[in-house]
Amino acid sequence: MLEVFNQYDLRTNRERIFIEMINELNWYVKNGNKNPYSLTRKAAILRLLLIDNGGLFVSIANPYGMKLKVKLKFTTAEAHSLSNRENPRSKYMLFKYLISEDGDEITLKTFLTSTALWIDDPYIKEHIDGKHVLEKYCIRNIIKLVANAHGGVHMERWANIPSFILTNSHSPFNINSNSKLHDIIDYTSEITLHALLLLRTNVTENLRNTKPISIESARKDIKVDKPKSA
Image: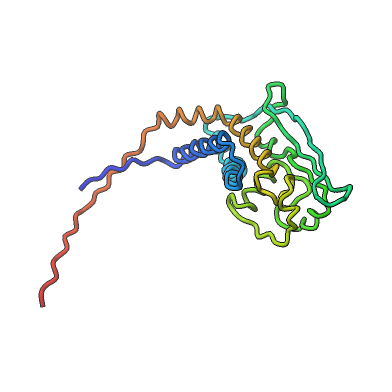
């Protein structure tokens, strides 16, 4: 019996994965949920799209000869006290970026190195030896913090963290709905989706015109003899 299977080559399958990841990330951004699972899922997608092995977007864009850039404007830097204890050195700075035609044109790789969060707090520094615990976070660090430490892809075994640090809105240990990590991951997602829009269009058109590889497989019916009676 002859069976026909429709298969795709590696490039096509990776382009299919790329489109599904873009669609999933877009859904999470539009949905607007600020819960731990949504946060970690967005970070996991961003890690694969932008970071792992140089970023999936690079290997997808190369055959199209595309250099992906985005125009961004630095908007604000919030500065507030971090911990609930009285200490003049307990503070943070949160950096925000906005898509703007008046902004500077940079590559996605450069955007990943932009400062996102700076923390100066002695109680955080007590845990600075812990993996992913830093004083200064760039966008790449934030993605890896959420994806690699908070459960997007891996989960860090943190212990003995004071509750006021676990729940403070600007603490790297906090992934509750009040966490500013949501804001950073959300604007990073929006910027990424915007930068990848033209690539997404080109890939979608290419997939529409790509025909599957038909593979024929011959299956033989195997006859099984009845067991002989004793």
